[in-house]
Image (cartoon, rainbow, N blue to C red; front, side, top):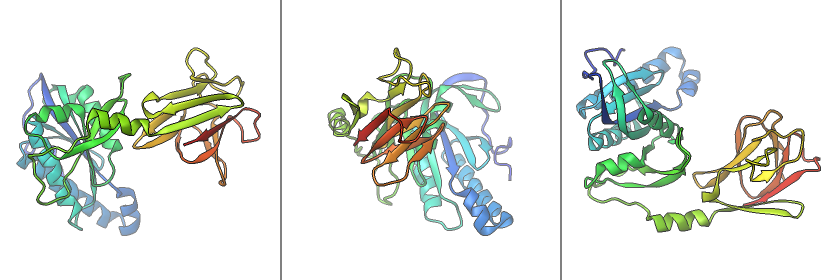
Length: 304
């Protein structure tokens, strides 16, 4: 199967133009190979990719390329891209012959040549595709805005920091589940309601008598040895300058380790978890220690 040959790809001239970029990723392919064996699993994944490519072409889209178990596509019309994404989820979500998929989309200026598409919009689409879970469609604010009066059934999903930016922006989940769902109404939380919801989430950190209260919109919260950069300074040789950060992702505070020596998280009534260049959601109560287990004299207590 070669869905990105000249026969299936619409021509893209060398140009810079606004487009909607969509990544659609097959979910669970690794476990499928283990469960069904190489031949059967590959046949199922190939059938899923072929069906997706065919649907993209029917919605006036361009199949740019396949990347493993994922397709990258381009649309001149944001509405057509969203309708295609919904069609893909309806196709793969209700047919046992296909694997589930997840979809991410972004809109903006792209650099197009005969064989590929480049630019920040491509990076943003790939980024939100990784945020999406199986049978979800996640779109950026720019896609939602590009729909204009032809708004669809979306709702606020998260605030994220897209790659290369310093500010957080809204991303939305585009619904597809209802077979009778209408494109005439948009369900989106107001900025006031979003702010209220974010302020309802708070994380308390304390070290001795030093205490910090972190709200969702005050992240990332930096813990480290660099006094100029860290919100919570750690005076320890085991600490990196930017040792770890606390971010807010999909309704939870998440500790993300960037360090050389790692970070230990000890939830109340649970064993300590060692993190190094990975992340862990902070829920309930517990203790964070830098570079060594909980016996450390420098312990950061947390409560959510």
